[in-house]
Length: 236
Image (cartoon, rainbow, N blue to C red; front, top):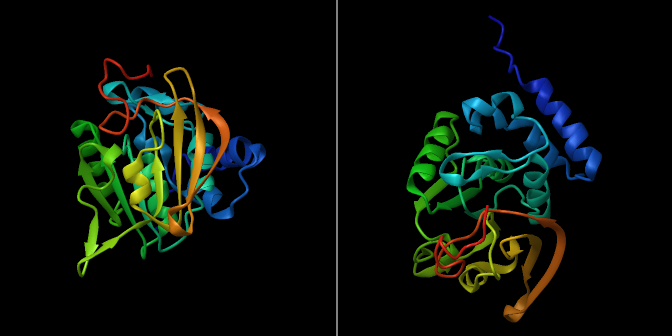
């Protein structure tokens, strides 16, 4: 019996060549992940015909599924490798989560936090239906990092990488504390009108090295170490 062919495979390949490789995404594993992860499974039914277009699309609760190019840029900036432990703030639709899970492989783990319970539960259902099992979920305030941290034999376990998929007014201090020495974090930092994608590397002795890349616009990171309430947070 012939295997069922993915009807969107050609669209994904075109997306990778035109939107990603053609605009400077060069990391082979990022391109492969974007080619393999089916974005249309994370897009609302009414937007299915635009699943592989060069744009963010509406999701539930006023959120969005990010533009493919932005997902690829953030993943490349993060430099995720197989076997890593990655913390993601903002599960959203689960699309970026799926890309990260592909990047870390079966030997790695993704820990993802979503503030809005309905979104987190929907994303978890999607990912589990796809057979993605190397991910841990939490519903709550992601700006404070993974709740109570990770521990193994009375020692804290830190993250190799942290990805924030919401706009923050500044880099949240608890996230730096949960990042291992030599680890990296990517976070959009700015105000309600725009943010800049910032890469933070934790050096020896707790020193921090920061660098900014491209401008972007994300929904707000709401929480104790982000925007304090939806009423005062930046617009979508």
